[in-house]
Amino acid sequence: MLQAQASKKNLIDQFIASLQALPDATAELGGAPSADHRIDVGHDAEVALHVAGKFIHVLVELKKAVYPRDVRQVLWQVRELAHDRRADQGVGEALAVLVAESISPGAKDLLRAERVGYFDSGGSLYLPASGAFVYIEKPPPKSLSRSMRSLFSGRRARVLHGLLVRHRDWLGVKNLAEQTQVSPATASQVLAELERFEWLESRGQGPRKQRRLREPAALLDAWVKQLSLMRPQSLCRFFVPSMRADRLMDRVGQAFEAHEVEYAISHEAAAQRYAPFLSAVSQVRCRLIAGSAADAAIAELGARVVSEGANLAIIEARSSGDLLFRERVGDIWLASPIQVYLDLLRGEGRAKEMAEHVRRERIGF
Image (cartoon, rainbow, N blue to C red; front, side, top):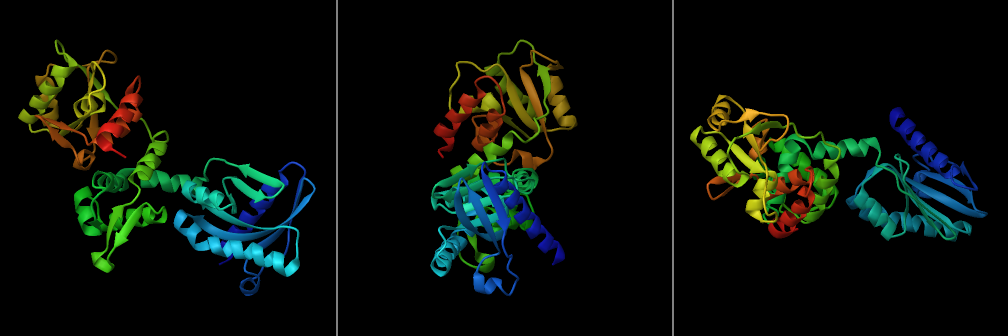
């Protein structure tokens, strides 16, 4: 309890400091309601703000974290808060502001669309007051950044991958967990997180409850934003002599099949098979399960390790989960279009153009 109160006080202090940093502005905390008193006044704190010669009575609604679903729940509350305050005290302007440790980008969009003020611990501030409009956008606070990174990495990313690949299907927790090779607990946690962003729709109750992606494009866009924060893929580069890239992919597939190596071609070579875009591809990149069988297949190709001039690059898969949703195209295993798209966005040259071509022509959202 004491820790929670200290956290709320710190958040309000940050909010006031941000207001005081505005040009020609002063801000003072009014009475912070007690738990009992809040029932009567309907808000967590009051701030007297003077900015550019204008007085604004700021009514603070405190939250821990805010997502789109939360916004819809509190929108009517903060509107009534400001309306009732003006009616009761006749102040020039009463402005309700949602103050939270973190506010998701989607929630911020909704709040701005409804002209409801907000502040988060990262320093983002939006005050839609008449004659004193303030909009400051800063990077999300560390707590939200950590949460997002966790969602788009490791086993949780497998669940997202499965949902995107099967975005038209209704999926239960158990079924989704089996398809993505994670525990039901992990699948359930990811689904709960996505529901907070309102990217899912659901039907049924209890063990029979199923979900389906309502906003696959929004989920994929959010994943793309996380790519720049992720560590670059580690590549082992090889040169296979006397072999053009278009023939090399078929030869690689044959060698891996002969030695029973699990693999999936990705990047430009896979994209070219899914949706031709470039006149020629100079390199084959592929994920595979490392081991003696893979070593034997690479040796059969006559490949030698190089630091530059490579025409074959290997990305070591940590488990078969890294090869989920691969597709058989002809005699070759290709990474899923979703995986190919994400890999291309981390590439160089015209890879990003090719990524958008794959998304438009093969993914479709």
